[in-house]
Length: 480
Length: 90
Image (tube, rainbow over all chains, first blue to last red; front, side, top):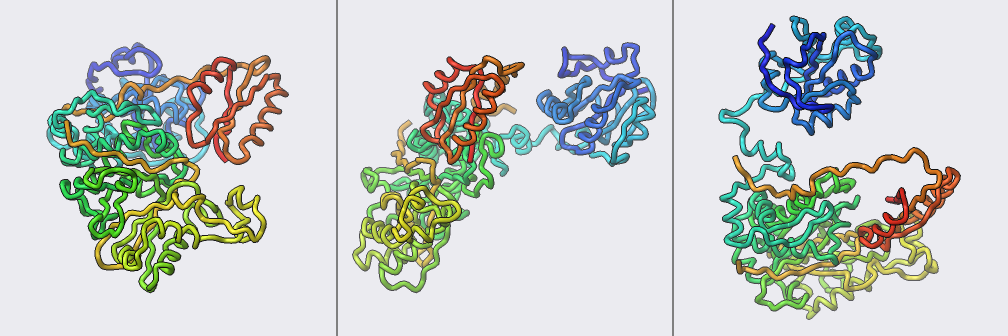
């Protein structure tokens, strides 16, 4: 018999227990399992459903207490369950390489994997049903570990401090550099849905995790401030079944100062500031705020936007007032504007030669956003107008207001064509020939200019309709 | 290795469910309509069934499905009733 370590193991149904206590004159069978192994789950379920056994069954989960409890609950286990987490001393001593493995203490007898007949013989119980045999999985105790303990990047995944991509571990030194002398305890407010408090220290931790340079931190702070405005409806956006994302648009001198991209590929990858600022905001919402996908974030499909989207407006290529000036800020202020949004829809238009034609194309592209027969929509649609398209409007002397009105007026359909499927009470209450607009109000149509100088591809981010959210602009403060 | 957590650990504690009542007789159940399409119809039927089981019912409605009930509304419901049924979605 192996010499067993005298370790105290956490049990779920009482005080910690030592292995020596388990002997206590009884015939004890330890069943080693872990939560990522379907055969472990199968074995526990079948054993939990068996009648009185000739031996005392003890489940030994290669999990921490929370993981062990979750596994026991999933399997309906009503016998003693012990948490035997890393470094898996008991598993190593007994040479457990596979789970499930049953070990009869004090004897050499063991069962590796699921073998119903062998369990019946060992325990003196009936275990009806299929399968009778199923191979097990690798035990956690034999999983390769890098020299010197858990790799720090893997450690971040273990802790759940991630959006699924590798992160930069938030060491105290990195977080202090991110804070740049700011008060770590200053609170930006509570982040729904779990209402974690967004202290600057936690926001800085998220910014480090996301890969931000410390220079980006003021933008992240302003973005979090904007996201927590009640008018943005952060709670609804966090928990909805919609694919609700958040788009962050940066205006003003911050763009050049931080190297944000508003030019070629502005909505795509390749720029650190764009990629990490948007990601940092999302990490604040999902980690500090508790909106983890599949947990409190109930989005049916999710959205690539939920990884994070941030870009600069290409103010230099725009014939119009930039977004922040339109929202009441000075042109030399640096701001971030958040818009709650559905996925971007690309709009190819290389043939229009008049502003009326181009406006109609941009407008009709949005006709199927949210839902094809849901007219009118009542939340914001954000158009990202490419420079070649905005130049055509500029050449014709069209202001943003004129374009907004033109799109609003162009996209109408008689109610009779919309009276099916998911449509609005407005449509049902209208006469068959009454014209319905795609938006309740022209102000629901917003524009920014971005993109490379060549190519006639604009885009529209559809709305998070029904969320009652509106764009929020916050000035970026560089002071500490 | 020491790290700075992004979580507010205070809010990660799981909250235990209230104990399930043995029966509904003489208890007051709040029926909260979150204001999604046809949620009220669903609650009408639930209300009928609850009354058949001897429960009293009160109705409440959120102004918008996309926002949480107000603190005042939650406190009001908590003061007067023992159970809540929420018509969550369409």
